[in-house]
Amino acid sequence: MIDRQIKLIKLLLNYTDTYISGHDIAKQLNVSNRTIRNDIKTIHTTFLNELILSVQSKGYMLNTCLYTPDEIQSALESVIVKENKLLITIAYRLFMEKHTFTIKELSSTYHLTKSKVIDYVTRIQTWAIKFDIYLSIKKKQGIMIDASTTSISNAVLHINQLTDDDFKVENLILQELPQAHTRKIKQIISKHIDNHQLSTSENKIQQLLVHLILIIKHSQPEEEDWSTDTESLTIAKKCIKDINETLGYQLNNKTSDDYKALFCTEKLVTWIDMVGVVRASVRSQSAS
Image (cartoon, rainbow, N blue to C red; front, side):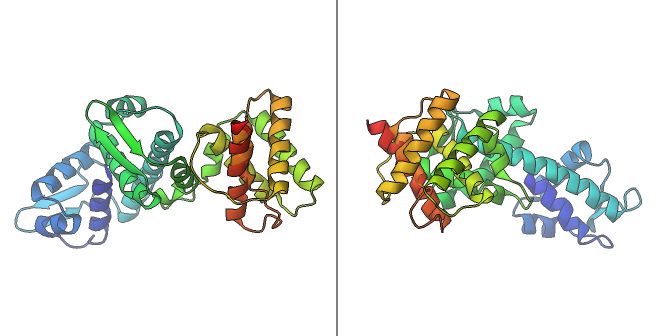
């Protein structure tokens, strides 16, 4: 089901003991009566058969003789959880992978109808605007993204806002590297922070790791001024050097420059400071 059809069922759940006219439903969902009729057919085919009763001159009502409101609500919640997971997965792939996806490609990959994929992309498109990310669907080219690397990274970190579920986007980001590598990188970051006697925590180390992965995945030059001190860059360079030597990575000075903002001498007090340090560290190694 698409988002509009879920809203239709939720609306009818508010009127379990009375009919609601097609006109009122169409008005609340901002669609035509014909669209409502088509949506009901889809709901019966893909969700629960004969869920919605239709009586001429009265309107529509849930078929509580076949399904109790609790059964409908439970089934709907299961669908919503599954749909939200798919929505976040698609958004994550659109932002993280250096590949231009087509509607057909996503439809095939996730076994979805094209209208369902377009529904997902439209929701992502609307949400992404607040991060200065602009998505457009080009018939021959696919789903185009117009945004800076910083905007995309910021959106990825807040991608859980696409749904009401308690979704941890960090888990998706951490899967970009082998578990053995993430463990070793955390040890390296922790060691160099301790060596410089900076106050930190397990949670902040995790945040530093997540940002480093985003920088590695989205590494490309941008004209930004991250004001950080020499110590910050030193810590970042030491981390990048150890990661390269230990895991065989080929991170450059740009990675250190982008990364240094996360190790500011303000003792990692604020999250923004941390983000700034990491970015600065990556750019510096790239330049050399």
